[in-house]
Amino acid sequence: MAVSGQMVALEEARRLVAHTLLVREEAEIVLSLLKDAETGQRGFLITGDPKYLEPYDGALDLLPVHIRQLRSLTEDNPVQKANLDRLDTLITAKLQELETTIGIRRRQGLPAVLPIVSSNVGKRTMDTIRALMATVRQEEDRLYDERTSRLAREARLARVLEVVGFVFALGLVTVATALLVRASRQREEEQATRRVSEALAAASVESEERLRVTVESIGDAVIATDEVGYVTLMNPVAQAMTGWTEASARGRALEEIFIIVDETSRRPVENPTTKVLREGKIVAMANHTVLIARDGREIQIDDSAAPIRAADGRLQGVVLVFRGVTEQRMRERERAALLDHEQAARREAEAASRAKDEFLAMLSHELRTPLNAIFAWVRMLRRGDLEPVAATRAIEVIERNTREHVQLIEALLDMSRVITGKLMLEMRAMDLRAVAEAAVDTVSAAAAANGVRLETHYASAPASVFGDPERLQQVVWNLLTNAVKFTPPNGRIDVWLEGTESEVELRIVDTGRGIAAELLPNVFDRFRQGDASLTRTEPGLGIGLALVRHLVEMHGGTVRADSEGDGRGATFTVRLPRRTTGSPPAPFARGPGDLG
Image (cartoon, rainbow, N blue to C red; front, side):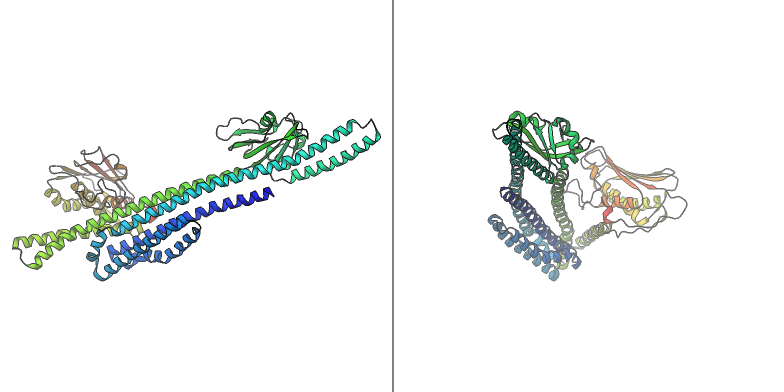
């Protein structure tokens, strides 16, 4: 009954651990759906395109289901119930805020919704939800620690009860065997004693046979020894695990049959029989023990040993019970790996969410800045109180800011095409020098306005490649614009175009600000900037160089950035395969799975 009750307790402990994991999973799903809803709302606010509301609509459908599931799982926990009551209020407020801004965007357009977004009301609500979700997770982490500790205790207790029960059975058989021996010694003294001895012998044979059947039916491995540690019995499981038959092992020291080492250090572990014979008490071996079988196999085991005592308390032997736990340890490692992966994925998701929020804030800033200038000058023009010179200046400012706005949107669209795999190339034979010259002509005015000297150095041989002229000109223009942006007045930019038999090399070398060593490895990553704050002096979203890398790689080439550090200038090198005879490669698109 004790063993049966302990197994019920063990199963309940396992159920509680699984229950905690389900609660944590549901909490993560609810938070993820809220983030999806917010992402869909922001995409619609920026673009006005209803297709961006798909994640928002999907989240609205799924959120009630998972919130109900989370409440059902935590209804027996007053702490979590209070947390979920607060969470319901916050989620209702967040969804109301999202619905309100979407409605305003539909009816009144982007300018009307920008003040609401800039107020950061939605961000503060979302931050509060994240903090509350972290509290929910902490409570479940606490319960997980308690319940896994309880599970370990219940498992150990179940093993001890099992071993003690088996030792008790062996003790009964030992007593019967002792009576048989005593009766046998008196066999010659009198016939009556002989008849008793024969009766005891018959009973002993029956008891030993019953014991052997019992031992052989046990799922664990069992080995019994005499009072000096020599093997007297092995069940089939023990024979299979050690590689020894009972016949070959009987009469041998247990140290020859049962060889164990530490899993980590590989050093021999003291044989449990030796410790039981020395201390006379039950011994449970430490975890991470490996059994070395006769054929060299290595099996991770849990084992314990107990003394076999006669009726008068004398130590008559040891019983050793052990089982293979290789698969169990493997599952434990897999669970630990899954937990680590889940935690890493959560950290990555949180980092991605932060990066998304930072990008959206940056995008809002970059969109709002030219719009504010355009709006201000348009209002002054509408009033009609500007002098002709000022009116001309106003038109120039409006035109320049409109151009910047268009360029920003075009860069976003190009990056979207890259991410979705819809950016196609129209490949044909071309001379890279003509592309470079066109890009230099476009940028030279901006360079001169900034007081930057722009010089070209072209090899005399044609720089023949297969490529899309428009996209390659975009590559050169982005690199030159980047160089002009970060090169101070009186600085210099050199454009070199050289080549070998197999490739064409374009180098853009500037004497500008340079690139810090910690930023250099990630300079071509999307949205990566040296200064990502909204107060930075240079505009941009950090996608120009990412587009450069993707376009160059789509042409089968490479791009590299080099710099000796702050204030030491930078060099960007593009290498493309030189055109050879034959048909040009077919245009292709890069899919989302290929992005860095």
